[in-house]
Image 1 (cartoon, rainbow, N blue to C red):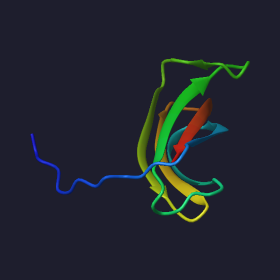
Image 2 (cartoon, rainbow, N blue to C red):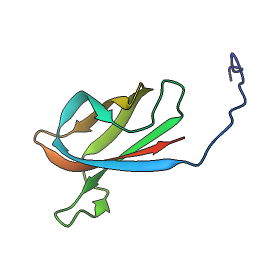
Image 3 (cartoon, one colour):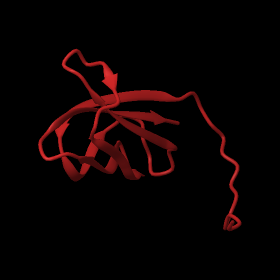
Length: 96
């Protein structure tokens, strides 16, 4: 196992959560407008399929978050929905 290059202690403030629903497939890169985000924000992202009632479920498609980059008031996300046609997915952002 490799040792970390640098360990930094973070002062965390109360977290905020946001979600966006998309109809999408393939690999994509999108910017999401999220108030209060700065390049030094801690942002965690998850993504799940949702059914017609908006309920999360684990379907047959592989849904993957690849890269997350916070900016000024936005988060750039590279992700993939491995399916041949658009699926309904929900992207969750936890921001600190």
